[in-house]
Amino acid sequence: MKAEKRIMIIGQPGSGKSTLARVLGNLLSLPVFHIDHIHWQAGWVERPGPEKDRLCFEVHAKDSWIFEGGRSSTWPERLERADMLIWLDFPLSVRAYRVFKRTVQYHGRSRPDLPEGCPERFELEFTKWIWDTRKSGQVRMRNLYDSAPADLEKYWLRNQPQVDELVAAMAEQ
Image (cartoon, rainbow, N blue to C red):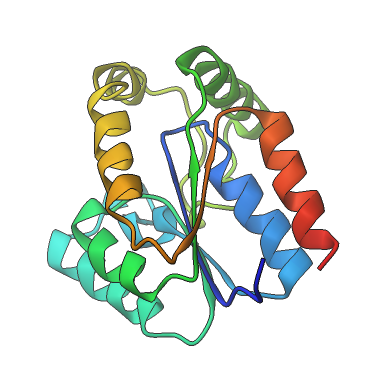
């Protein structure tokens, strides 16, 4: 492993992107950016697409970052700037459990990876979206992973022990 300055983390809801980003941010002293801070404004108001793109590009332009999450329209530029790509590809059962757990844990409060004014709540629409995109999201991420430059350091992690192993290896650097 080389000294990473820009780490791109992708995965579907509940895969652990935000948690891993925070852990690596603390470990490597890199700033962490959560896509949900770009996607949402207080009160669960979604930003317009062009504004989301602009904010993503502002993060990409920085010298160092850990950027977790979607906005696939900006993935090509993010990937081009990244030193490392991490894809968290956990089973739906694990992801659903984690989404349920965080919903209960943070119910009525904003999670650290959400803007203030976006209290956690149970959303049937979000649950349906997780189900509806379980295959298409995985295909998009697989295509991104496969299209990454050959010299890019990349990790396709499918379970928590693999994540823990990568964190331990990075801590030894």
